[in-house]
Amino acid sequence: MSTIANRATQLYTEEGFCCAESVWLAFAERDNISTEDKNLGNKLSFAFCGGTGAKNLCGAAAAGALVLGNHFGRVPGEPRNEELPKYTKALIDSFEEQYGYTTCLELKPDAESSVSKQVCKGYVAFIATQLERLLEERPDETGEEERANCT
Image (cartoon, rainbow, N blue to C red; front, side, top):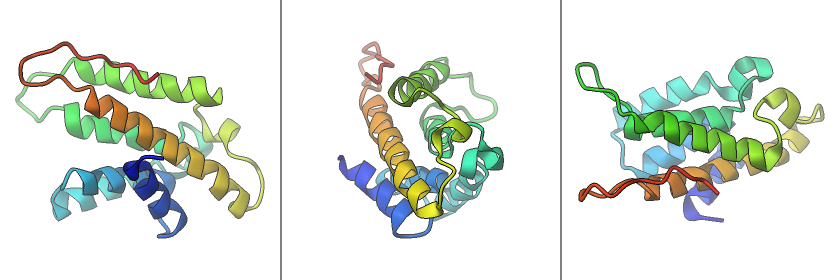
């Protein structure tokens, strides 16, 4: 398991953060995001916990999209980065290929929280690993074409 996946799972299993917060915080730490931005991102990622509270899109996967938005999103007044949807789709598609589903309703067992925690730990690690791969594929400053492929 990669260092970033280890950190994300540690945040999830040992430090009391939900799946989405754990993914966001691991990458915020890695990217040396300011405390203010890290805290804001954590507040935003908390909304994704438990499949946005309604067992919809896996919180870890949703936070992965948030991390990608931090890297490829735009600020008001700037043009859209057309690569963001491609990277987000690659992330979510790889998750669905790996697990067959993307929603907590299908992914998370209806069991005691310790069982759910162990199962979801794998989702957190998978998303962190896939994000790391995607971010490593970013084009360099020479303009090389990027490959949004998680597999």
